[in-house]
Length: 245
Length: 300
Image (cartoon, rainbow over all chains, first blue to last red; front, side, top):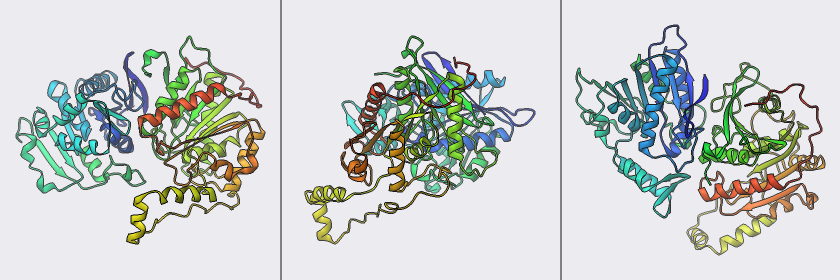
């Protein structure tokens, strides 16, 4: 495991590179954290997933978006558009570091949306894993607004600032965000009622861009109450690893 | 105020320990800024990794570095990006991690005097560790463990009497359902050094003894309690709890009534960061009375 900084001097990003533990690496995988208060509880699961993937032969990079975690900037400096741009920077960093020209993306919650948007814009993404993706950006935003404190035209979600621009971009996330992904995609769900999910919402399943939508119940890693020992959806994480192989 | 890299604060990955299993980030003062003699070490809050709740630790580290203090925030073994120690079960793991963190700062930036910063169980760990290392010259204890005093109950029930919600609960037969926080009030100190893990509770007599010993050594202590603390509700409660210590100039106590326990609100974070910066800038820290490190390569 190698923690390091990358990016430009005015947009420094923190990443942790986990090289393949096998002689010949299979591919690179970039892990995309969820946003806001979901980031801290998810950190442990991302470390675990990175380790599983490295064990399976992947070179892995998990990184903090600008203004979050250990990356440069402050909480009010990032927007969803800039976080998507950070995903692209992380892809290029992993390609340089691991010496590969194609990588896979795996994102949790809003991280899945940013991964999907980056994948739709790039030709060097092999496949995408959308892990418990946010499907209804408006509902996601309403939940944030319930707990947020209003201050002018911004909302403070326990420290993470939701500007009008950020709110509009959150609200724009719908199943169509994922349906636009041109690459093969695994949608893995650990929470909720799988019967209300129509796999067709993620796009046409076929040879051109196969879709797997799977329900693997497990711990909810993005909520604070699940932070204790054992709070990992181990089956789901193993399924992600198997699918990427 | 911004904490963009353009402000001149530089950050370096800290990968240290024996073997190198511990992970953290060192914030270094801008090149033009005189470096202060004290280095700051910020420890984990429970299982939250080194960025702290709502990034409090990042914000604090960058601000303190901007003021000239080299600041390290790191993860204890098994938390965040630090691996568990290879030997797995360590009798005093927190103590070893802290020793490694201070040694790292010694060898990389020539630090010999340290100020520890911790919140909740992290504050308790700082209090205990400060007694074990003569290089510690200060500690910022944010919402450390505390005990309810008779004064606490008077204030608590006086406020409740003025709240309609309380009367409604009485009329409906709902109890307050409060947890007894007095366990440990008269307890003796634990066996061993008690630093297997960051402690959630410290017996009151041990706290008093620790604070008396540290202030006797000239260690500066900033106690900050928030309105979110479950057993603390007034600035004066500290002196109700430790009347013997009243008047010691090394102790500063603050009560941030509007802040929540993990400083989730931006206004609370700004308030506590400003308070700590001011305290760090104005306290007369003693020179650490312990051996100088033999060799040091300045981190650059």
